[in-house]
Image (tube, rainbow, N blue to C red; front, side):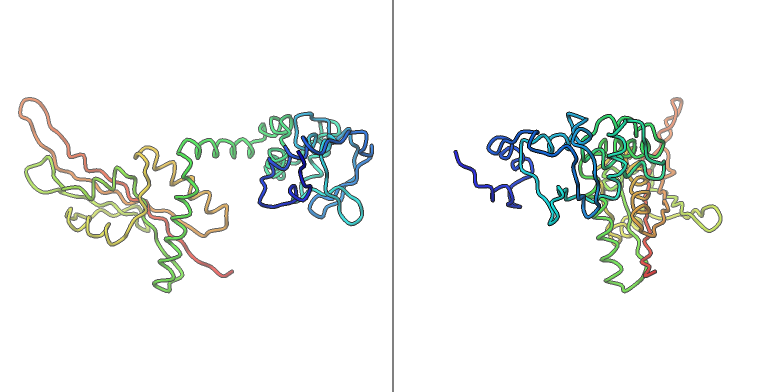
Length: 295
């Protein structure tokens, strides 16, 4: 079977297939590679040994420089890796003797590079850093919430941007509701008490909070007009999602703040001689406010 080498350069062919084809159909031996390797990693130049690059046998670098497939070179003959090389120095330093670690300030970015190059020893070591472990913990929480975390977050951003464009304002608010709470508001509005819902709406104020009485119809109408983002999460999961979303947005440079509005019915139904039943209408509306700054 003949495989055209141009196939391996075709961007439509996945990197995994390119690697499989190159290993199977264009075998090289490691002896063809020089003992001293000059590298160009995204414009950053490095010089190291072949033994250093292949030290971690299970890493991507070891696979790349195993001699089993073709490597790209730049105009001066350096082996080219199409990856930002800002933190590659730390990768090489670790591979050289296994003891040189990055500073705490650079640990998280080096951790991401170690994941890309699949250097498990460095990954395990860096996870002992506080900020790296916090990142790993946050990723685990996102994973637990489901694979749609990024999709929901993008929906929130898009909704906020559309509101500002529509109203030509430098600020916009997006309301978030769990699926359970949205069903409660959009439901029939029946109450356990003998009368209609007796709603207490608690909103944050400059000092503490303010409580106001409202009707179920008014609250339902306001929510419909607000067009909230409804997340298919349980109430217990919603708080974690909102907190992580807020932290994520801030880390990406968005100017955002959060306030929470609680809506609760105070009605009860008394069973004489037995006890009482409280209305289950208890809703939390999470409001994220965006401020669009040019500075």
